[in-house]
Picture 1 (cartoon, rainbow, N blue to C red):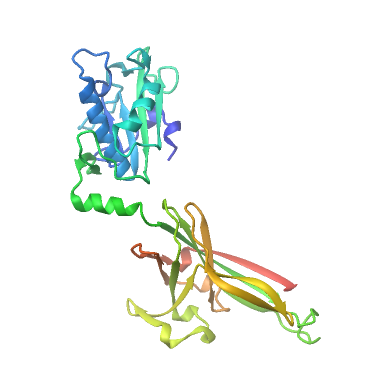
Picture 2 (tube, rainbow, N blue to C red):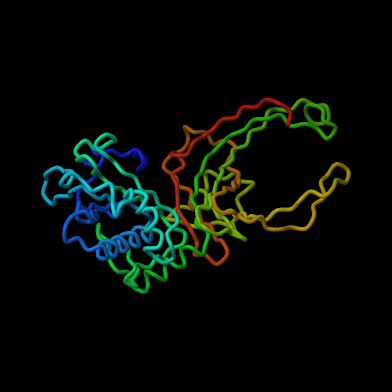
Length: 345
């Protein structure tokens, strides 16, 4: 889907029909003060409600000047569109000034676009057009409308939010939120001896192969995670015998898995003794908003892409006081990179 800045009249007409939570159509009367009997306070109150609902429900777009018929007829520009000059000012600039303070907390992440007859909306009249207000998902939610209520999008409409929903939205912005991706890679290498010579103690050795499952977690929330613990549950046949600890065996949907855990704990190397690293005290490296961190888990060294069926990997992330995030992924849907590196490592 193109970004809102790339939409034009033809694209808008092809948007899905019916009750959609992320888009709201308003005709010309919803915004155009040049029309007689239009009440500015009512227009701003309604816009405040729509913005509150969009910002509290993950974001969305409000389009002024376009009809949204309930039958199967095509959407059309409503009576030539909205006047592009309101109260002696450019409509787009005026909206950019008033929108932030139509809700509390003030809205900071939004954009206003105008489509004119010469720039994307051939159905508009001269001096009029389509006005699109794109509201981003807000990290400062919930946002209260001018009438003192909080709103969310339900079934394509702005509805007042109950106490439980408002509490959930308040908590949403107080924790890290994670998006998880998996990949698999195999690597082949020839070990070296302690003196750095090929093979072990001068003897030739066979190449060795390892297979790793990589979990990458991205913090898409507004706050950092100070402490995080990650668990993955891997099907038994994907785990080598050396890594099968029966204390960590779990059963999921009638299948045996082995569970492995990692944290964001770090230990710095502070020196070496006889060639071996010495570590300092441990510390937790916080997962900052917008950044990613990866962890690797060993799989059976004989695992190959053509030997993967419909098995699943299950995961969960426990960060600070946030509710646990969890999910699952099919192994056969993961990218499998083969790194046949026949070099000394």
